[in-house]
Image 1 (cartoon, rainbow, N blue to C red):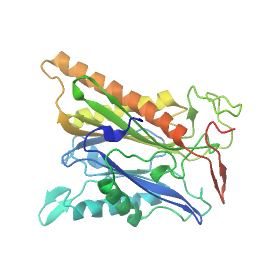
Image 2 (image 1 turned 180 degrees about the vertical axis):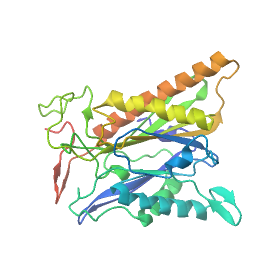
Image 3 (image 1 turned 45 degrees about the vertical axis):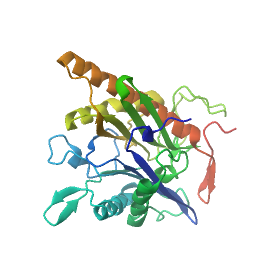
Image 4 (image 1 turned 90 degrees about the vertical axis):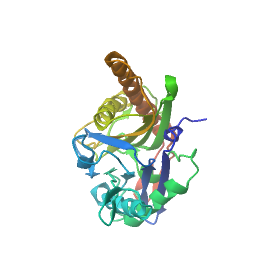
Length: 315
């Protein structure tokens, strides 16, 4: 059975996508349990993000109500409003006089026009639908490949299909670290063969493109906002281990980190605390590497009005 981000208790994933009639895009929502601490680290040179400043460890609210990953580049960030509206209806959010304000950060990949219509991009309604799908979906199920935000994803400057991948690692003491990746990278997978004569570690052919790999890392460990931020930062190593090149000027590589707080780390001494955090953060990087490679492996060939995107490894 494939390991997945939902191996972290309480984490749910919902996908919504549209294909055909000019469409090749979608939305993915990662829905954590209430009270989950979150942070983010944005390292790509061309990011498209929403509400990421709220995840700085020095800001007022330490928790996250949902994370939205979307297609449609900057236009697609409006999907966060739909997920936020769904969270408000469920009473999820930061309590303020008169109601709640859900904290819903988002990040987007560039997939504009890949289905043939530049204007076919996710909207607020799709964000709402993806959040509802995350809440109602079977806990163990996580769609992989050409689903959600990975529907229009490609890799290698558009040479091959990208997609959604997921993985998890279980550590001693019951700590679980999971990752979900939307792989839409300029680079190519490291150490893999395309099956078409290209070297996976060679410079990809074609003109520069607009790309991005988006990741959500989740753990059931107890982390404070600063430790969550460091986990997001450490997890970026998984992108560098899986893709070459990564973190380029044309990528918007972004990693969110979520800590649900179900399992306490060993903090009996300062040395024990450091060892626990280093072990968890190393696992986060490895889970990201596995999730990225899973996303590439799960992708299928797609033919649209805009062209054909073969799966990596297709002959």
